[in-house]
Image 1 (cartoon, rainbow, N blue to C red):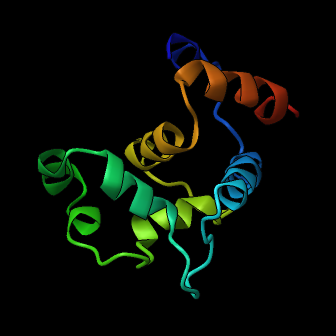
Image 2 (cartoon, rainbow, N blue to C red; image 1 turned 90 degrees about the vertical axis):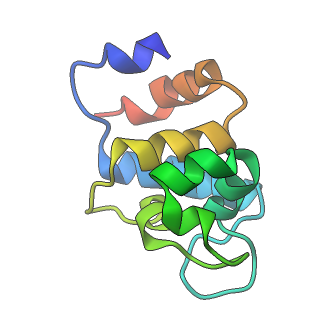
Length: 113
């Protein structure tokens, strides 16, 4: 995770959205507001402790399954709106096996300028 902290410039929103959108599709997750498949916030709700979610992401803790939460799921599709670091970190943690895997993907795709 240290590599993420050493970045001298931010990740471009379009690059972020492209990589995360592909990862969501591979995982069988819905990336839009309309539909019946699970969204990335469903994975966060399943994998994070409910006490932590209640404190830091109450909209995820209290959501119904397959419900789109704009503050989290929107980060997977928006190319022009930045989301809080907590949303990005949560999404990365459920889509990648490790921070090293996410960092490898980041280096191969996000650093294209």
